[in-house]
Image (cartoon, rainbow over all chains, first blue to last red; front, top):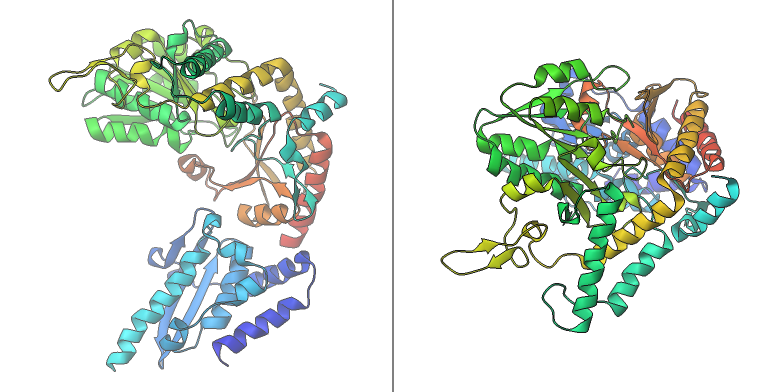
Length: 142
Length: 407
């Protein structure tokens, strides 16, 4: 599935809820069901420090696709981490670099990505693209 | 204070009528900044519309009027703190700048390599970093007073830290995270026995408890206007005249000079020596208005009512399973930090926000304290005299709902 198709799926899933409480419950469920990052991947170099919560991001290149895994100590943040991974993982570096992430805005969770919330999410999105960019130089050489 | 009085007070604060996500705003983030009464905002408007001219040395009418207002404000602050002389009041941009000023100017005048400064484990970053910078500059050492499990400073350990190298002790009057009211009179007395000076960070104290700098015998006392219903961007350094006179200026510029030539510049006397550049004369007059407002209600009345609110909130919070109050000192101000079970403070804060309730989450700019407690941060509710028990009830209901969602 393309990245945009995945984004549209999430938007559809969230659109069935009118009430913000239900949206946040879904986010909490997503956060709770995100596969925890192995302890060895929760190392310092994978940490993205926010002022409020910490986010860990691990990336690797497999068969030309970038595979992301991540976690956070706050469950709401973990919910968004889960969404970001759902959308971006297992795509080529080019696809990831050229993607505009519009789903966060559409599902009404943009506030979590605002720089003032300082929860590490904005830095995570940047970091995900940076990994893609780094892997692109690898794949381009091959 | 009775219900009617509180209701009248609430009418003085227009922002309390705001709706957040279509819900009534419940503002429990007063430790970060307080809301402003109408009279303070009107004072600012009035100053810009009717009193605006650069102060000091202006020969014209408006400049004279503005100068008088600014200098009257200094007198109001001096009276508020019960300072011996109005010249001992220096206007700064806030608590942070006031501490930086002392760390720089006191450091220049009195400190050398090998000297020591004492702070406590429960300090805000603004009462740690300026001293660390001084220590780095001069090759000095920072010593830290530990606390017990309730969040009370260990006075015996403090005594043991003082030695012949100690130059200054800098501690908060009230902890912004735990609400602990530190025994500052005792801390000062102990320091003075060894001829060590003391700076008290009063940012979290002045809105809640009466302060008398002469009785305390504090060498320096600092606070911010915005935490006591005044405007942002202005604060106060009180310093004993004898120390301030021996300290070099912090910044150079206009206002702080007596004569300037390229060969030699001489400095103005107190308080102007420490107020380089055009001062915030609008801010100072608005701060004075805020202090008058607080004094009209009576700081003792405020303290009593806020104590009632804090006790009630604590009691109701403890109804919630897994509730852990962080900071249980016997002497406590209107601040409650807490955690529930293993829930991250950010999650609680985010969901409470959706219910119109403003609390603060995280490390509250006191990372060493939070680290020493072995936690990630806290949720902090901090009260002011415009808050009510009804608001606390709504907060508790909301918190129960949020905890249920997150567990």
